Image 1 (cartoon, one colour):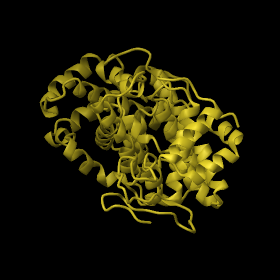
Image 2 (cartoon, rainbow, N blue to C red; image 1 turned 135 degrees about the horizontal axis):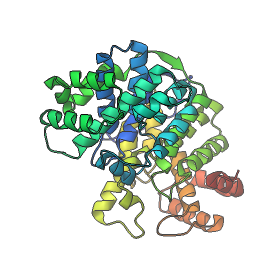
Image 3 (cartoon, rainbow, N blue to C red; image 1 turned 120 degrees about the vertical axis):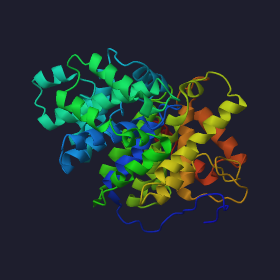
Image 4 (tube, one colour; image 1 turned 180 degrees about the vertical axis):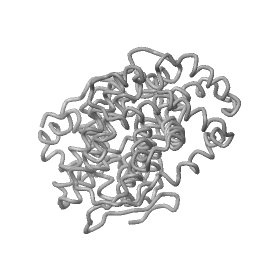
Length: 425
């Protein structure tokens, strides 16, 4: 496979061995998708994870409990998909009706057995200690403490976010005053004392600096405990993040799931073996993770995008590639997902290039993406019929923007492809 020197390179592999992945790395990297939601306030999850682990260490938590605390903190806001929701959660110190995103996050990670133990921590990360301590909910003490630590440091980050531009180290007295004044049973006394202890060090606050945060978290980002994930497990995890992305806009519900189903079907029609089809489906499920970095107003705009908005929108495929390429073993998947807006004639984005040749897998995801998008309503139009969709697909083939052989496969199996795209199969 030939690509321009500016483009990442990868191509189809004739025989694919099962993926052995470091689950910690997988969770850490994919949590970066959640950090995109704030758009102008990124890395909330990583800041919370950094402060949570520091507080947990001060409490003397053992390594196993620190591991769970770190991972739950990274994923604690998985139930938040829109910039509006994120801004509401960080713009106020105290608020009502926050349990919805806690429950959604819990439900998401209960679906994936390797993260199911994190779900209760996520579910109660906004529950005051006075309620958490007394609740008859079967929670272990370690789960209650972990949830309460995340609750406290999440509120600290909300306070910091309201004073962007102010050195966090200078805000310590104010933050402690607010925490203690507003406590009223919100925090376990030992958790508040542990935070008071770690926050007395300048280095704690310096570690929140954007250029220091990733260095601080690097030793925790991987634990080198590799395991071979089954296709079903990895597909489920990809589906979790796909559902988070699709909740970003009322117009994209089930988009990634539809692209995933149709991509797997097209891969089968194209003659790829079962393991290869699963990889293509995973790439398709994750193809739009970069969209969480795009402001809601652009995704939901009912009219044409202006040049600045279009430049922002085009970045989503680049962000998808950059996120997925960080996962060891995801080299091909990152390219197949990140190249879904490239064209056979080189006119696509974000990598482009007139002499770019695209892998079959990337072309499959690209065609499936277009079919599903045309079958789904958008802010500027109603969903299109199968017949109208095929007319547009043929025009895109003529323009050199889609693979003609794959579009022919769609045409030959139009009804099944349509049903898979819209989720009625």
